[in-house]
Image 1 (cartoon, rainbow, N blue to C red):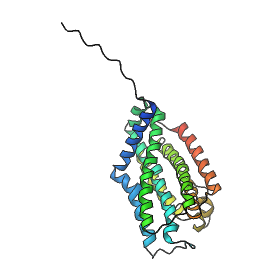
Image 2 (spheres, helix red, strand yellow):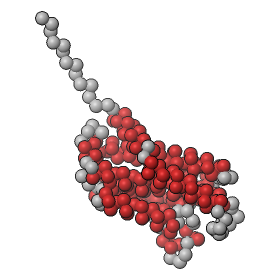
Image 3 (cartoon, helix red, strand yellow):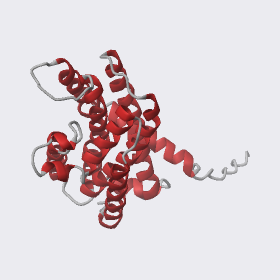
Length: 258
């Protein structure tokens, strides 16, 4: 008679870092393989950049800058908003409605690991966005200030923190269908009148003063300051840090997992 094999002890969950990296890869693939999200995060910003630069019918005072040098920083800021806010809010809202967030939060990944994976996944998507939009802009003649490239990355990180916090706050408190409408409407309003593509000083009336207080206006000004002048506006940094802290606190307090 052959003795039954001794069961091997369970290896246990993978290390926390490995779990977060696996979730990061999953989140990034989910966005980049989704045709609708790819359209919003990459294709639309590229088309907007080409249209603003090539269509002469749109008369815009660019100062002494070429059209591509004037518009490219704002389009990069808009791309950051699409991936960290609109895309993330909609995806998280439907994951919450379908019970995915509740199930994942009970696994060894945990709530903290799940949120960390989502934020890092957004940063991976933004690397792809910046590479595609930046290459398109260079082919159109863009020549950013070399001294401001590193500063622009700081602005991207701050803007990602603010808009990802906003996305989680919206996704964790509203119904999925409402999030779909709110996220798309907010992106449209911020793109047109939020100081992200066009500098706040070019907006009409009170919008000039309002835009510099919004995270969209602060991100747009930070990207223009870095890539056009090689410096990061201090006020824009203060506004982005303030929004990231306030929205992050709100999301931590109000987010519902189911």
